[in-house]
Length: 515
Ligand code: CS2
Picture 1 (cartoon, protein in one colour):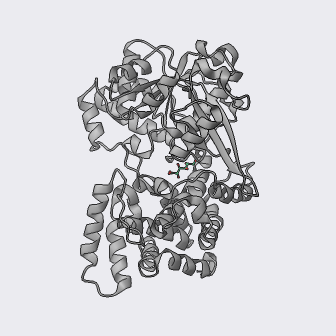
Picture 2 (cartoon, rainbow, N blue to C red):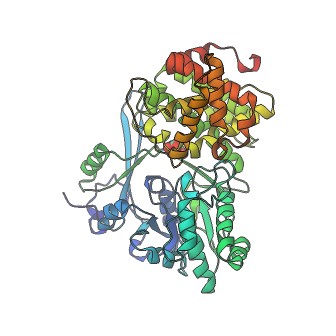
Picture 3 (cartoon, rainbow, N blue to C red):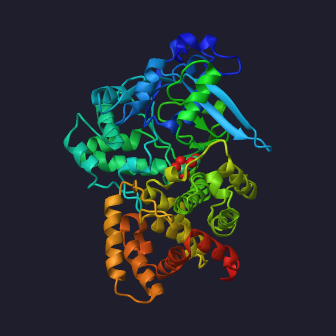
């Protein structure tokens, strides 16, 4: 079977969409740090539409993708001239799978930073570069998740402050690249975070300016006054590509694509329209431009991602491997639907023009999409970076409003239960989390404090108090007795009755407004 390649595009079956512009004339206007499946399954598709719609201007918005460490995306896609397939999958009412295939051409080069740091710095400081966007996951910002401040003890940050020519973090690459830009008298850039962080643009600005201040106050000033950092909300479920996906796409294309990307048809990209040096016509691909993205971020982090994290921890512990299998459990379905409607929705900021009930009701079918196989283990990763904006932020709001939050507390308790490192069938797994070491220390300390308490409820409270004192995740919540009590109650239920028992109990409880 031939390899997918620019020379082979005409041989693709007619139903497969392909670049409809003069790709050989495409120039790079965007550098994207973190070219994983999410970027390829979301922003690259929308950029492809903007390039198609943009005529001559559109051809200035090709993407140079950067992998900070792993060479796998480079090695899979460069023999294909950067081309790859996006497969959007859903299931009809009768369970039949629908799949649409599009070969995307927007990515014209991929750099592996670890192999060639100079090439990445050159690209950030290239005159054609106008936007640097990022999907480096929550942990890539080297920040303290509870406050959003730069973590100066992060080993990557320590190294990047000491080694100007060989950064290892996205923050280091941005600072050193912008330093070269300033020195060369080039114009500013837009730095566009597309990660699931609270106020992702503001957070990026804060950590980057803190880093710049350490190396050159003039650079800090230049970045602060000339570059822009729009906040944005990104949404599309993009699970990890499986060998079955690779085989299925090859059969459909009649060509071998080494690394296609699979996603759901739904997507949303809400961006603040603050660009320092122009932007592609992303609205042609369905992006939405707003003055303030923060309310959309809060909506999405709490309803979509918060629900996913709760499904992930209950699912891993109870042995349900994918979100559709989790939601197939009536008790979880009820739990998630009720948490969203009763506990999360009342914490959301006003969003004029959005039918919030309809938005909320559209989520369960997305989680249930059986054509995706979205793994609970994948979502469960990096909990320390995700829990603060997904579950702790709405809990904080409920405490401030004097409202109960037993279901959100069960979500947090499920994360703590998961951190013990083995599921309810006794199968052990590794905790993948940048703070795994620190969390293990905190858990051990909690156990030793709880050891000589004989009352089970008191023991759990002591444990949770010790864990919640871990500031980088919990911030000031560690001092809230209401929080500690609510989480301890749910954790005790999980420990003594398992996921099924705890869900059964919470679903049978009266409306939290009356608790
Ligand atoms: C998921 C997200 O793995 C995770 O943390 O919750 O990747 C989620 O699927 C996307 O944010 C959906 O837009």
